Amino acid sequence: MINSTLNPTFVSVIIPAYNSEQTIKETIQSVLKQSFSNFELIIINDGSRDSTIEVIAEIQDSRIKVFSYPHAGGNVSRNRGLHLAVGEFVSFLDADDLWTPDKLQSQLKALQENITAKVAYSWTDYIDGNGEFILSGKRINLNGNVYENLLLNNFLENGSNPLICRKALIKSGGFDESLSAAQDWDMWLRLASKFDFICVPSVQILYRISANSVSSNLVRQEKSCLQVLERAYKERSFLRDAPARSTLKHNWNISLANLYKYLTCKALQKPFNNKKGLTAAIFLWKYFLHDSSRLQNINFTLKLSLKIVIILIMPSLLDNISNQREVNRQEAETLLNGWVIEKRSEDKNGYPSAVTVSS
Image (tube, rainbow, N blue to C red; front, side):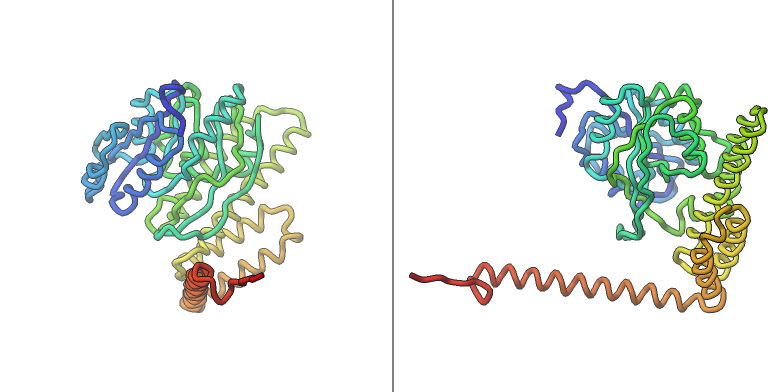
């Protein structure tokens, strides 16, 4: 653990919390277990109506600072936290996500070793409501000026990822409070337009997917993402020469294709129902229209189409298949754990796997 008396660098961690009683304790513990200890943990209680405050109060740590306000939304809460922060660096964490213990230390080290960079980011894996692994996130390692790549694809993936120089955040104007979603992508783009990024090529963020998460509202997410992209591309519309305009139009289509590919895959996650199936079909069609490599990616498109058809006709079938896979996985883990315990017991007693050699 980094000793705060030897390392004067101070970090502010900001958690916006709204009705987070089910997950907030585990999220806070993932911060308190960081190998870097010289931080303040600012929790913005955004008018929670459940027992979020009571759960937080049970955790005793002098680094925790709780501020309560009437409900105003995640963007306002993040900006409130930023206004209260005193650290040289700031990192935001959603109230249901988790960090690995080395997250802050690794990202801080990357920024200290690359002084031109003002944002350090890591890789993400996705977990369910029970904390079980669902899927791996993107494994993109880009450094320096990442704006063009970030415009094509939000490879930071979520708002719980980067460690950011506080002055850079303030200079960029904080989070856009008019956006109902995609506020993180908008913020990362504005930062990338002015500052260098540095990657820590390691999984350090566990992003929780649940039916109640903001990212699960796909129509709202589509609208906000389009707002972010339209604003970013509008700022580049001053390009006058023909090749530059052609490249801009090409990149616009790539951005839209990547967005609708992401939204389609998200719509095809559990729980399955007809409404999500129809939404996925619309997103897939928009992906197909904007994807310049549609013929090369036809197998991928057909697989998604088949899954959509099954969801529309027999949504319970996919649920049963997924549930059976989960049961099989759990049974395999139980058998493996039982075998490991039995094997250790046998090895300890010297039979039957032990071999005795006598002279």
